[in-house]
Amino acid sequence: MSSTSRAFNLLQKWCIPSSKVPVRSTRRALGFIPAINGMRSSSVCFAHELLSPTGEIVKDGGKKSTVVLSHSPKAEKVLNNQGVGAFQKLPMVMPAIDILSSAQRKARNVSPTKGIANIAKRERNKAAKQLDTLMKELAVPLRTYIENFPNKKYLHPYECSLIELTFGDGNYEQILGRVDSLRKKLISVGKEHASLCAQSSTKREAEERLGEGLKKVQEAFNQGKNALDDLLYVAKSLRAMPVIDPHLPTLCLVGAPNVGKSSLVRILSSGKPEVCNYPFTTRGVLMGHIMLNYERFQVTDTPGLLRRHEDDRNNIERLTLAVLSHLPTAVLYVHDLSGDCGTSADDQFFIYKEIKEKYSNRLWLDVVSKCDLLEDSSTSACISNELDRYKAFGPEGAIPVSVTSGMGIEELKAKVYQLLLSQMTQIPAKEG
Ligand SMILES: Nc1nc2c(ncn2[C@@H]2O[C@H](COP(=O)(O)OP(=O)(O)OP(=O)(O)O)[C@@H](O)[C@H]2O)c(=O)[nH]1
Ligand SMILES: [Mg+2]
Image 1 (cartoon, protein in one colour):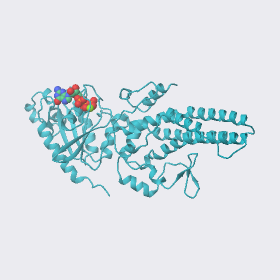
Image 2 (cartoon, rainbow, N blue to C red):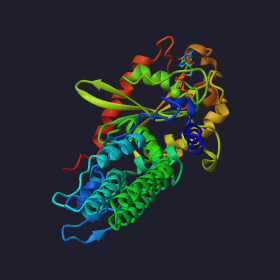
Image 3 (cartoon, rainbow, N blue to C red):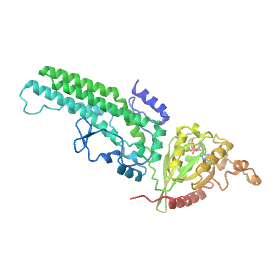
Image 4 (cartoon, helix red, strand yellow):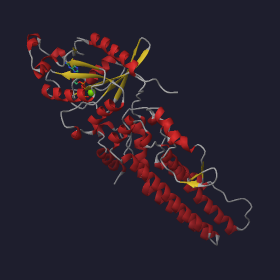
């Protein structure tokens, strides 16, 4: 399977919209989603450990420990206190082809240990050292990645959800597992052939065994390098995600698809999400900021929610629920009663009731959008049925707005500001 079709399959498997993935060349897919901010990487707990030439971790005392994605309780505490931000600290993953060519160059430049007069001995010493260098130069970067990509267990729950929803459950760990298998394979093949070289009895035999060893290590690398391409894609996607600071007051726009959420984000904040007249234009969590009276607030745009059972929701919808569930946001719920968005008022009412009940503890504002398209409904003031009232006016207290005519926008801005100020008093201060 070619790299491109493999990358495409991966996108399908992970439910990532391929339209959002710019492909730089036919060889590699690039990341697309701007996202979030994280915690200390696992390097924290390996600060006193050394690398052996083979990329294994050797403790100060010389005892080997396996490369594990775990953290000491102390490191875990550090991680948890830091909140979100881990994705900004991910290691830079080098393309597989660059790792290989750099390792081959370094191996070629290795010279035999000085002072060996015997030609056969010198040659077999050089061959073993070259193979050892190649193996080390390939294995060490891989070990660094495995160590420094965070263990989901210690991530902020929001970041954990982002990984699961973006790449599919278990795929993140699976990719890291494949990188680790590749590392182990390289060490085993490299060691085996370095040992053969070291046992050569003539110069010629050492040269032949070196050639064979270099070939085998390279073959092993090429067989498993897909894992590195996938890890590179994961790193780029995660690093590009918007950074949400849970210690800043945040407004989250929620509603059915195509109701005008992104249009409002553009008017209320510095965020410039795409606006189009079709549902699910917004497929990831996007960010904007509001600066007001020297205070900074965050605004998140989220994918639309459809009327369906929670278990049937797709990963794009679940991103919205992840924001609501794991981040202390205030909600700006958008209702479109104009008939323009594609979700009926009945369905919007149903979704609204469900979300409002689930997140009843949130500070909340309702807006009825696209009011320029609505007829004057003042005659309906005496409606008593809740659903009919909703269809005419939206929920009680909803602000009628229109980004097209500007109606209600100043009132909305003032109320949003008040809401965010109230939210500020509820956010616990940053520790440390
Ligand atoms: N007439 C009118 N059209 C609007 C208004 N606000 C948004 N629209 C249009 O409604 C459509 C959807 O707007 P978006 O802001 O992309 O809606 P969304 O809720 O972010 O959509 P998704 O990201 O797909 O869920 C676009 O064609 C907008 O131009 C408004 O106040 N009046
Ligand atoms: Mg949108």
